[in-house]
Length: 465
Ligand code: TRP
Image (tube, rainbow, N blue to C red; front, side, top):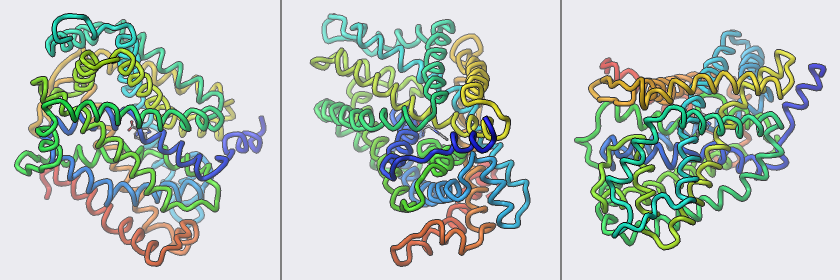
């Protein structure tokens, strides 16, 4: 393939703005919303964490998302080449290309553990579908029983590896075939279905006797529970959940038709993502409290609560299986966006075919995943992170490093580039915001508010503020 042909292939366009919204929402909505948001909220004590999270989405997430989409659309290439090209156009240093590199590295690392957890979801789909949790003991499964099943599951690295492998294969197959065709169809049906099923779960949760306590836990902030690592995690969670800081949204933006509104689209995506996360929290915590489970259980939280609920619900095997299956799909559309920037870049710069590029990137990620697999069994260790005890060894290290550090650092540079390096008239032209004052508001946020907040949170952690 000639370079030109390759570019054209990689840089097809979404057929409409609506498809971009679906694809970007597919990227944003995933394990981050249903698995990570509830467990992190539980670890950091509820309401105060949720409030800080929402503030981060509004003051940092949305402006950065707009910046990423804008840069992507203006560059129209993979993040590394986009950053180089835009830096050249603005007369800035070619070193900005390294921002794309940071994103590629974050993508590899995140996908390596993301795929392992998505593998758990696959395994739990099979378990619910085969009725593992609906054993007819009086009153259904006990909390202890569900916990034991989970503990036994993660103690077996071969099983985890098999599920991780299966999920990586699923991801690589779609990416190799080109994101547009497969993804457009998938997200159109699956996202609404997941949303409806979450509502069913919320309906169930409302009728348990943990509901009032859960609402209190989630929405009444107790600021005495918030610590510096908690604030950092809330900010990291905003980046993780919105797929920001590594070029995933940037590359989807590079496929966006030039007449689509960047601001309106970004707000829509962020709102949908936040709604799903909150619904997941509202579904899960009543089950936690009604069954006397530990809110701070960590990554195992949804794998303990949901099977309990489905075990007791009428038609629980069916709903449970459907729910985990939809969660697999949500994780799938997210995983695709984690690997897409790398693949596009390899295809653009190294003359690899899309299939080869995907195979190489997929294999690297697959091998890296073994680190996460072992963190839950043979290589389990705990450590203290600014006073927080983390029990899942390398998994926690990877999570903190990527979501809480690399993504926000990427975000700081994106904000600096969009707000300070890029000429105002260039960003204004690309954003084409029609609402009066809309552009100025974005410009102010991306130039001052977001970077200052991000830098403050990172420095605060180091005790420098
Ligand atoms: N946002 C996804 C989720 O919530 C995960 C994800 C996909 C992601 N692409 C990303 C996170 C890019 C950070 C960067 O599950």
